[in-house]
Length: 101
Image (cartoon, rainbow, N blue to C red; front, side, top):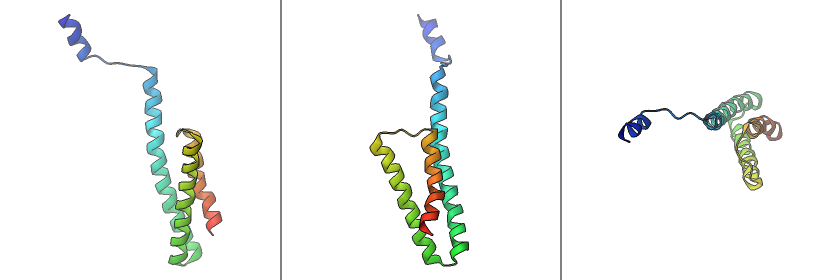
């Protein structure tokens, strides 16, 4: 019995479900990273096109509220974060730049 317990202590547990867990972890991490990069890119583009810092800050505030609304709708609908929702969140940054300008 001791040999089996020692063997199980240093063994590896492999399951196909772990691949899904790793995918979801990377999707969540990638969503945050992509959202930050797209917000920085939107800030630069809005600053270059408007030429006014105050208007750019108001537009960025509008974009933040639009992203918060999008995520809030996902939560109210009971959706979990997957690849489709990640794409929608990142695309909503680009769409919200059109509405804020």
